[in-house]
Length: 156
Image (cartoon, rainbow, N blue to C red; front, side, top):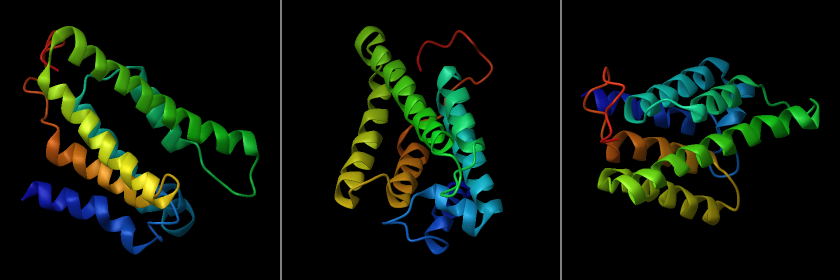
């Protein structure tokens, strides 16, 4: 029941933006509360599934920095590059787990990322649809860490 509610919240931006031509950042202009809710929900999903690291700081900063077409270009670029850096850092961490720890569960990250890249290629850019599919894939395919209290859990 909880996953259905979370999926509903993850796909709610579909009704507020053109999900093929716009990304989730467009919610800042249409529905700020939904943008904040979506960002907090994604960050919570990721923290429950992956050990927090530098990627969390980059992703959170990318959500906090406002994007504005009339704003300075460097600020808009910083917003995008912080989020790209977060995905790269998390991918490197998962690749390390796959190659050195031989963690088979870490492979699901690359499956979810691959599906998102296919959607991005079909849309021609990072779209809200790709972001919603990515967040839904994290929710449905990547298992939560079994022991969130243990900092020495090497299984994830």
